[in-house]
Length: 166
Image (tube, rainbow, N blue to C red):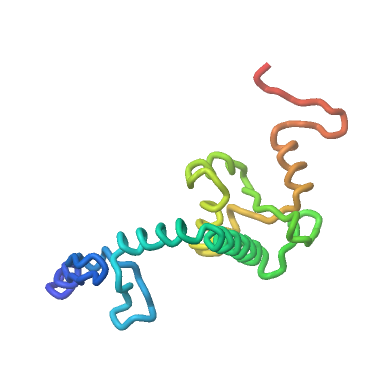
């Protein structure tokens, strides 16, 4: 490691909110500022956001709902080349489209990534699209339910459940 990279790892910046002198890694990135870092440290930003959510709970809820809707649309567009539709039947009403794990394991992954679908959506948005399309696909709710039944050995036509543990 050269002298310049060692020096840049230990550069410090003062947070004007709390007055502490901290390593630059304690500041979030911000492309709009001269040094490409937020002016407040991560702790102060987190506290400020928490205080804002407590002070304006209705606005905070609206903002969260808007963010969730936008990330869902972004994920559907990413997985479908901007034309969201079911990979099996072609149904294209976004209200009934779901992200499906091609090889199963969705519940396990969901629990590992925080217990809800937001963790999976974040993973999809932050992973190269070539890798994502190997793991996930878009299915309508009906095709996804049918796929889940078939994956578990349920035969829809004779209402027989093949339980291999018997």
